Length: 129
Image (cartoon, rainbow, N blue to C red; front, side):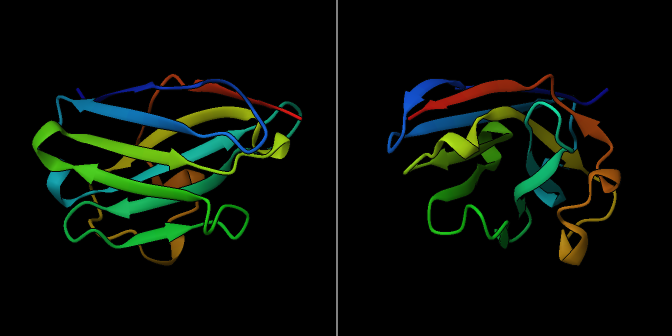
């Protein structure tokens, strides 16, 4: 059974940085998966932030985070990271890691909540102005 565990959330001031980690266990094909980071603020829908195809490193980003966030992987550790710089109050949300081990490359649907089979429990990020 695949399990995803996020860590690294916290409270920072605007302009600060955080690095989120997502450790996957029970995951045979981590090296050939689409791994994503999503976020959900109170009263809003869950939205895609960034995704990475672990088989080749191709990355995808929401326009709102391009140039500020970087998604990366460590296949030896079955871990995906989200480096978040220049944080803004509007980045405040619960951040979730998600995995799709069935379809390989992420492609044009990388931001779709429904394509991911497995989800972590979330880690809270709060950015104050």
